[in-house]
Length: 526
Image (tube, rainbow, N blue to C red; front, top):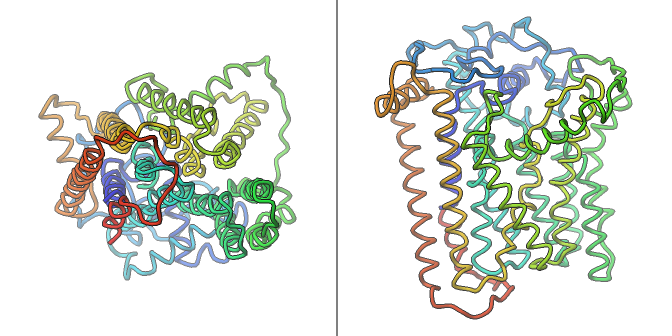
């Protein structure tokens, strides 16, 4: 049920967020299409691929920063079946817009997307916003396993029941994560691959140093390395994990096997360094621009650091499509959530509800990703005095499983009758954050200039249905599924907690071979 609720929320966000509104979404979609058409395969070099004309038919909004409000209900669109196809809009002809800089990334996400696209016969000649929506649905399916991976990691680390269920609910409490999963973006493949590596690392940290597990870690690392550059942290991270395991259990490890299986992915980045002189070239040119540091800390470094922390924390949980950097209700909600997560992590580290070395290994990816982002934004600051460049909270999602499990582990020492309410508390927090987020999105995109109150809401709903690429009946099913799945999960959690209302014994930090919460997730995956 949790998996079904997660997927349903993501599918709902494909409707409330118009096409093109996710970062670089048109370029991601265009590159998938160009691979499928054979224009981007073999993989082109930097500056060798333009954005195609046909991909502009995928959406009807700008892909740049939005104004404070876009008032989409006041715009008129062609009828659903009369919207332009990829071929109608010019197909793979160059748009003359700019080079697609996303070829700086490895090709795995785009090749798998092209394989999905090739399974849709005649897609070039149907309205392209419909094809675009199906690519968004494909991304939602890529991310569907995330709650299961969180749950499985928490169980492997022997968190007491029902905390693995609470861990599975973590993605629902991060609206910007579910929004990202609803968009065409290579982050989605990277996040689920790093989540799977985290689960296997949890096995290593609990004594499984077998060759089979090491081979799985290496294979997943190779796939992640062929998806996005953030995965370059993984080989160092798994080395740290195996070092902790070796010290803890006093036996040899299979680290060499894990690293050897990672080599095919590393070769992509070695090739870049040898051929282009940079591990990750710009994407628009093969020339490696010389960057001269012209500014330092005294030129506004404190402001840069304040912006970095504030933007990363805010954009981890909520969107800022307008770029206004407002301290509104979504911003306040995001920082309450940040405070809760930081507090929970500190409790886990101080109380040691997980072994401290285990917690530090699990937190290493999110810390490393933050440092990578910080170094990139600092480089832009010292060369151009750019105080905001590249400060995106979504870049930290590769560490979501480790961060989520460590935060949830803070509740491991609660008395049984209290601890059994933790999943419901997470669901309540998730519901509040999602509703605050939804309200901000409706205001930004779907507020009409000429209506207010109930009439404005009715107009917004009608417009969302009109803009949606598929018939409104399908969207109605998606929304109804969200409501039903949400109610079912809430009922199951309350019933589970109520059954244990009289429990008062100290918690046992052990997980039996078969736990009752298996059913809640299993029913969702049937």
